[in-house]
Structure formats: C-alpha cells, structure tokens
Image (cartoon, rainbow, N blue to C red; front, side, top):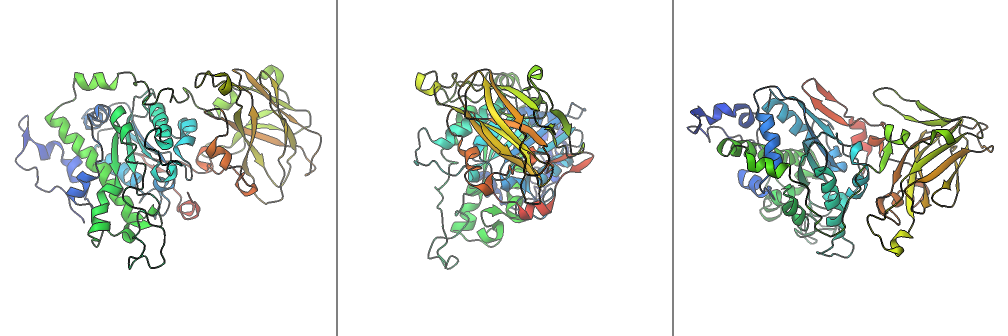
Length: 510
C-alpha cells in the first residue's frame, strides 16, 4: 500500500544514460497505494495518446518553456467534497503537487475548475468559466453527476451525447488539449449487495455494470481521449477479494471518495503520466504524433451532435459585450467585490433605468426543421436578491424575438445577499433583444437592481439542469459559486497554492 518503483528499472539505458537518472524525479517522487496490476486495470483506455504525449514531452523538457496549463472539470468529488483538507488531499491537488516536483524545469499551472452538483450538460455551456483557453491537458469527471440514461439505451445514449459535445468543446480549444476521462464508481457501487453482512439495512447497491463509463468507451475510442477508472482499479480488491486496505468503507464516504479513495485516483493519473514519459523515451514524439494533434476534430459520432461554438455562459466581459449601449441608461457596471473575489454586474438604483441586451437565440444550425425552429429557447439571468435596498425590474423581449414579460423582485427577508436565477422563454432569433427596466414599485423602500450574467440554453426547449434549479422556491439561488467568484478555484504553481477552503468541503453537496 506504499510502494515506488525502487530499482525496477535499474540497468536500463537510453542513449547511454541510465533511465533511472533521466526520469529520477518522475519515477522516484511518488509512492503508490494501488498495486501495479490494479493500476494497469484502471488505465481504461490508452490509445495512441498523441495529445497526451505532446503535453508530457513539454513537461519533460529541460529548458524553460511557456506556461503549461493543466485543468480539471467535474462535480463535487473532484472539487474536494469529503476530503480533509480540500486543496491538499483531493486527488487533483495531489497530482498537482506531484507534477511540480516531478518536472521541476517546467512552468506548470494547474486549475481545479470543478463545480459541485452540475452535470456535463452545464459545463458544455460554461466551459470557459472553468478552464483557460490555452489549457493543454484537461481531466473530466462527471460519471456520478451525469447519472444514467433515462431509457437505459446503448445507442443514442443521452449521457454519451452530452459527453461527446463536451469533449468536442474541449478538443477545439486553442491549446488543442489532451482530454482524460476520470471515472468514479456510481452511487451504490461502493457498497455491498443487499443481504451481505456489511449491508444489513438493505441500502441501495449497484453492480459493476451500473455505470455510463462503459458506454462512453465509444467517445474514448472515436476521439482517442484517455480514460481512467477507479471502479475497474478497485473492484477486484474491494468487492471480490474484500481485501483490507481497499474496502469500500475505507475508500469512500457515501458516494464520495474520502482521502484514501482520492489517493488512489491520484495513483491512476500519476501512473498514466509516468507510463507516457517512459514510452516517450523508447518511442519519441514524432511527425505522426504532430499530424494527429493538429488534425481537425472529426465529424460527430452521432450526426448533428455539435456543441455551441462559443460560451453560452455569459459573465464578466462576455456579459458586457451583450449590452446595446444606445438603448440603455441608468445602469452602471460595478464590481462590488474585490480583485481576488470579484462580484461585478450592471447596477441601477432609480426607477426608469433600462438595460438592453442583444443575444443569439437562433438554434437553426442544430435543427433546421420548421417544428424545431418554432420551439422557444430558455434564457437565464443571474440577478441579485438581498434583504435591503433592492427594487423590482421587468424583463421583456423588445426586438427580434418574443417572450412573456416577467417582473422580478430583488428584495427578500432572508438575511443573505446572493445571486438568483430567472428565465425567459424566447423565440429564436439571431438578434434577440431583451430589456431589463427598473419599475417604480418596491417592497424595500429603495430601487437597486443588479444583473450579473446570462446563460443561453444550448438547444431549444427546456434545459434539464438549469430548469431543475428553478423547480421549487428553495432552489432558485444560483449555487455555482465557483462561477460567481464566491469560492476561489484552486490553482497550483511553483509559487504555491491559491484557494481551498475546508469549511465549504464540509457543507457542499453534489
């Protein structure tokens, strides 16, 4: 449970240099928990890995290069839920610290862009809020949050369709990043069958097959993106052998891995990096790799399954770009937070103030049929609600598109100030203009109104995840604080770590 390579590679030379000398920091700075056989099993898909080989080659370079950015997106598991401490014990932080030590000459920046409680369908819209455009390696962990296809289909599986669009969005980023899918046992899998002595209360149990990761093999193979599987690495040890040190209850806290489980997730990623480094010494990066890296992303597996070609999550400067200045008055763009934790948005304090926004709600590229073009598109807005100062505004479609106007009261009695969601069902139009007008009415005695962002649905009709946030009154708060600046995304560089707060790790769910 605590081993390294030791002298396993002693006596092997590459270009008359001992391999253990060339890769001394790469191979000698990590102790594994998972046995070697389990690590190999957990490498669910390797493929040609041209983009991954390109990144690891840069990491191995002895001469300083431009920054190498490595990111991760996913849900509460990789965010650090159930770890102590978040930013230290979660698997991506452990991997970040390993990379900085293993490749001391490289200028590495890692960024944890995970957002608890969200599925891949949300990240398709808001990818740019979680990764840098020039990122070169992105890990993706959504197996638990994605759930299962409602119809349990193998072909045209809803989870596969969403993940294909997300993977395409990442592959098309300017940095042409490598993509690695990190799979974690689904809810109930890290448990024992009903009737087992360790499951006397007949709690839900899921078998080895009860996951979308197998169906997602088509995405791995078609796009040659790598896959790591904690399920496959652990299952023989935890469920078949029931081996001490690898038992479900030792690795998991409910469906979230604890510190021990996160260490094994980090093992899988480190083993992949080490294996790629070893392979590069024996088979250097060459023209065939370059050709694969810079080849266009192939057409979708499922015809028409294209993602949006730009962010649908419009915050900060992207939100400012929507404003029709000549038709707006009385609103001012103000940062009410700090440089480290910004809280920007358009703010008005007087009745009659108007903010006009021009958005593209046309979805004809997805489906050109008359029936599809008649389906409305949901447009969501982030607006502030608080217990003081707030007024009422009307949201309405004024040009290009049509929708039912809605009045939103920014005042409530709860002693908190945070962003909430509202939405309009707008008809499709490439220049849909929506106006936000502050009304004379008020329940607080004042008229402040703040709007800080918009999210446009990827496809016509109700957006499953975003609509779910609005199903009941208690769910209208926009809880994705990593995209509003309330919670700092964790980054690691040579200068150290920024972000990480265990108080959140104890309280957040998802």
